[in-house]
Image (cartoon, rainbow, N blue to C red; front, side, top):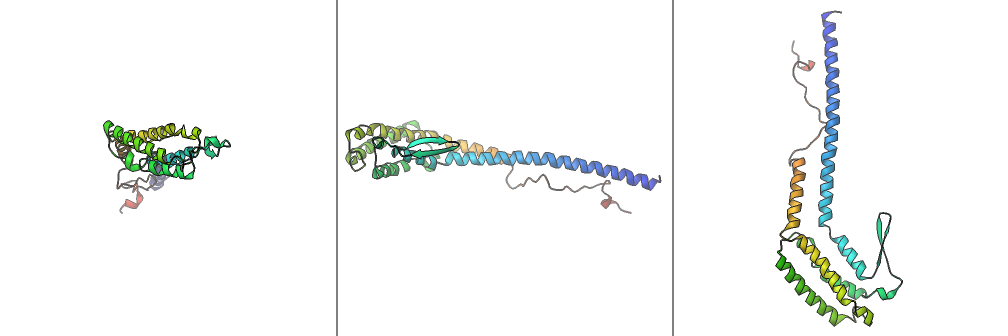
Length: 215
């Protein structure tokens, strides 16, 4: 074997090792990328879930209608009860309560900052006003029997407790701080302005790349 052939054989061996290393790096990089972007997607979904209040409002509306909640597989369905005495509000009553509730159950509420005294004041004022509205409009709202009217207090308490839970998320700006922390963690995984592409080919310089040889 000539010196030239030995040199070529040795270079082929080195190139083969380099390709194996590149493949290993690409494999590890792909795993890291999937982990990072998977985590980012999960964080993004979590943030959207935290800010999404439509499902809570939808559940409240069904409960105001007296609907029965059932879980079928992974889906939640609502059925109108056969016993009409379980329906204490008509469509007008449901819409009236929902209009009031929607003013309080929204992103602006949970992303604000409240102290405990302010939350208590809001709930106290709302409870009094809501009780007056129901008392004055109970017949128009569908409470046309003594049985239905007897349940108006628990109805108001349920609404107030649900709204209280939303305001407690904003106690001391807790919800906003939680989302800010989640965003910082996500951004630390993939710094802004940088695109992580583990499959990007690296330029191989130096003596081992025959393209760089000069004769």
